[in-house]
Length: 386
Image 1 (cartoon, rainbow, N blue to C red):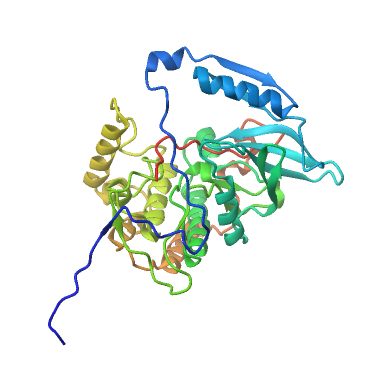
Image 2 (spheres, one colour):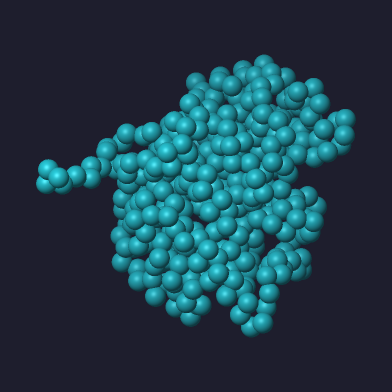
């Protein structure tokens, strides 16, 4: 032995985590081009009905020049000569989500639509991640390709998001939260084993199956997902620093907010914060106001660091506190004990003689405003950046 100690070096900003998955890297999120609040209030919204792509493009070009916001709709458009768009379901940062019908079979699907000339195209990347991960917890893909001037991803139609339900009910019961936690830990174990971290754990990115025929939970929105290890060597990519936050400040892990690259531990810590939000309806760092996003994130980070886990989990089953404490102690390259906390969540599920019955708080339709059609909700992340 030469007596020399190997030093761990933290590489700055070098990113190799998507090399094995695809040549396409997640796009950077565009900063808002209109920063003046008074200007924002004066933005004119144009509502355009159209079936002609050229007409849409003309309006888009005008918007790019005039800084006007355009709301356009693909309803009744036909893609791939057989899929007719019936309505818009929701809208995200980079694409819109529509419901469409196969005119030959009457089968119904969801789809994302993105213009080929989008400044930050990401739909192909998301498709590749979903195709790589395909399994029980990921929406199945029907078709991805280009139709006319648009990239279109057609996939399984699912039900409402957890964001929808928490807004309706304000809080979830311990039983419902524990059942969701069990499923989400299982989903994260599934994608982590395949070398992927999601990096944007939040209620809007988990949706229930469609109607009472499917009571399982699904993970969606993989636009910010990333490989954290090589599936050839099974080695975790080196820890890097000085990253701007990818994810949602409310649920982001402490290390992610400090600019460190994310791994399994960060998805799990984000989940822990989300569970507390379900149980209490708010988190200690909600309501903080700052003039700039940078200062807001700084204040949220400070509040997260000073908040004692036991205080956050007061009057709740100890398993939730144990889960948060465990995730915060994980090292970057640690392999989490998923089964341990699935067991602990099952203990919570069975409190009071209850079972893993998949009867959620919203199963009682009288608690919710009845809607005719299922909705897929995709919450917009206003603080994501690679």
